[in-house]
Amino acid sequence: MRSMETAAYDAIVLAGGGARRLGGADKPALSVGGRTLLDRVLAACQDAARTIVVGPRRPTARPVHWTREHPQGGGPLAALDAGLQQSTAPTLLVLSADLPFLDRNTTTALRHTLTETTADAALLTDDNGRDQPLVAAYRAESLRRELALLATEHGTLASLPLRLLTHELTLHRLPAATAAAFDCDTWEDLATARARIREHGNVLDEWLTAAKQELGIELDVDTAALLDLARDAAHGVARPAAPLTTFLVGYAAAQAGGGPEAVAQAARKAAALAARWAEEDGDQ
Image (cartoon, rainbow, N blue to C red; front, side, top):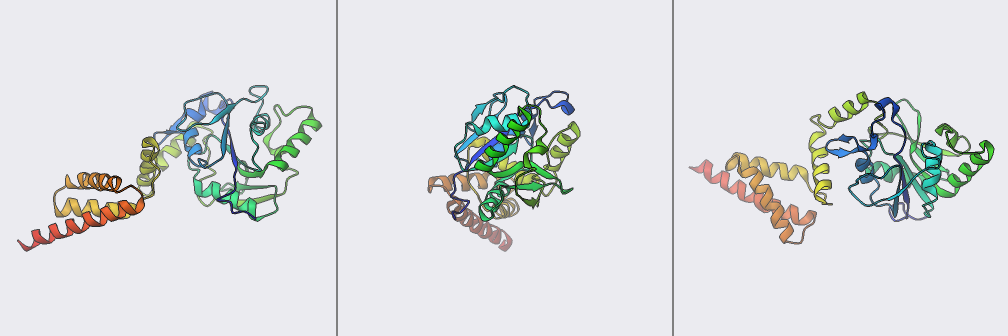
């Protein structure tokens, strides 16, 4: 059986709906931490072979394929069917566009779990144990079959409740280890999400992720090492040395070809220099 890291998959993101509890606001375009909810979800599935967004076209941080449900406003099952018509992959990641804390670790875990089981779908459950069928990985064949059966039984998929989707599917449930299943249905939810990313334990990672997304950078670095370097430069040399030194480290790493090891090597050199500088200052 193929590893989920190498298996091709498509992502279907449902970005329609009336957002009635938000007064009809364009929910996927609302921002949390300077990024739209839709872009935050797209970042969690950026290695998909094809990403299909079902809903009105909007600016996005990366290219996607757009489609609409028939009829427009026909609900999640009609939207899912429209997305399926644009997909050929055997595995599908199905996501709603209002998940501010979804990350690639979660989407990878869903796909890996599906590969390692015989289930039709692997989905998250929220903090209350409720199934989240729009934070899930599906076998495309099973999903097509179930939607066809529902369409035959009811004469249409339009306006059918989402809960019907998984009644006949075999499911593997994953309890959400983080807030990945948290969705923004109300203004209170949005305010909670915006406050959460500014908490002391989250704000730095959230900011770095947003900055890398904005700058088009895909690079994992040792944040702790860079922070230690900034601290040493600030204390051992002068406070303005901290941002300037970290800038120079980034520049030197780029000159050396980029990558985490180039950053780490430049940071080690600068940290050693800062240590020598501080040692001399202490000898005076």
